[in-house]
Length: 94
Image (cartoon, rainbow, N blue to C red; front, side):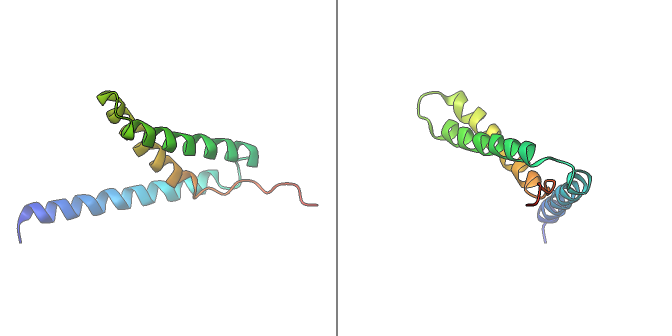
């Protein structure tokens, strides 16, 4: 087996495990501490970033829009993945 394949797989698994650990750490620190209003606002901002990133990637006018759109889409998707593992505070129960 070629060592490049082994290095690639080892690097990929390392990055994946580090991201999973980061998600677990952030979820443990913030779950139950974020109000529902703030949670909803941040969630909407992240979804808006995903939509803007997709628009930037598919617009045909400016090449730099593609690069910026890709970065916005990438980071918004990663942030949404982390944010979706956080549980907001319980609201008032009737």
